[in-house]
Image 1: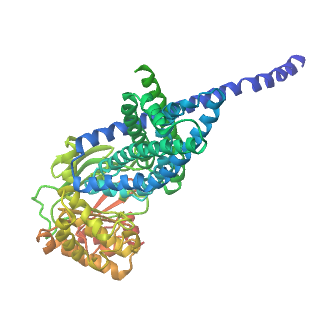
Image 2: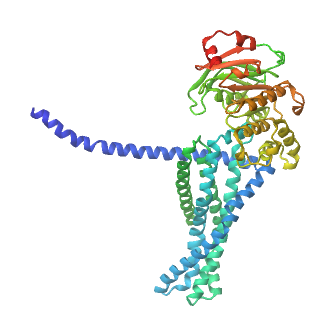
Image 3: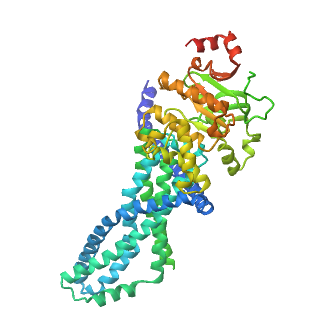
Length: 284
Length: 261
């Protein structure tokens, strides 16, 4: 009896101890497996898109090139007023924070250098990409998800139209070009609005000194990496959102979940690419 | 199964040999097994089946939009698995497809744009060069009056007709229709029968060439006097029923039940 009663006393301890790490490992394992599956799916989709873009860029250009222009209009031109406003605020905020900090150590002369490091190398491209993703990336998932759910993609295939060529390629090129252009606008506006704050706060820094500091802090790698980075962000956002909207059979009720997944994966993809570019920059 | 308009000596346009038809949702599950079927120029088939019998999957497989999970599928004499992507697209363009429930039109585009898209894409031409062919297809399907409306604004009857016009705009040799009469009233159904009969006999809008027609349906009764070849999808089986006379004389209980429904 005693032996029998001792067993149940030991079991809850084991029962309470063993399943927790096992289910926790199970959970982590599933998440890692899902992550690998997503990377594999998005990677394969990206390779197909790259292949189609290089082999069919000029095929049916009377149909696809207007679509590219439409995407640039949608993801670039229409967002320009928002980017100008964002640039104004960003320039003021960065310089306000920087000048306040630099004044404590008597180094307010370096405001221009900080602008280059913070804005041109890091914040400008990433902030623009996230803004475009919020404004256009989510809309891409919804419109492609609905098209897929309503069978329009199968209709394209029945008409001999390659869905990647017709739907994905214009979005990838359009978003890459738009994010690059918008980032340039954002940086220019933020640099000028930053000096506006310096001028209003009577910081002893002439416009010549300010812009000279910026010019001296810039290296040729900044221009090359800015172009590469922004185009990569655009391609990542377009590929991930198109993948989530298009690459799997969706029902109407799945579209909202696909949108959420696309946002999370686009942000993760852009941040990971940004980290990679920092490593490249440091190594150069 | 013989008919006046069909030409048995002509090589088949589409052929399924011992083909298992998979579900688009679950590619591992065979919905219909061991289908042996040939479509020759000028034939007019009606393929019946209850809901979920696999009619849509059978039709999309026949159109070359999905592969059979087993067996052979030949389009215009060529095994589909041996075709390159370009050859497969070229073969698909010789088959017009009208999908179920409004034809899967591009809802943001106007009727004209829906029809012009395949022409512009394949010919790489501006809209004005496609206008003549678009106009002819719209006249054939009787949709000229809604040309400037977006597909999303149209009711089911109009959408089905626009889908027919879009399927015909590339001048196909075979026309596949997925349950084209679903949700239509008898007057609209009459229009469809008259139009399909004219297309099958050789419509001037398609150069007078007889068009092979294949329609799936969940009610074979209205098709008994229209189609000339019949088949049934029943319990994962493909049942060829023959011509009108064989259909009328068929005593098999599943067929009688289907025709009496």
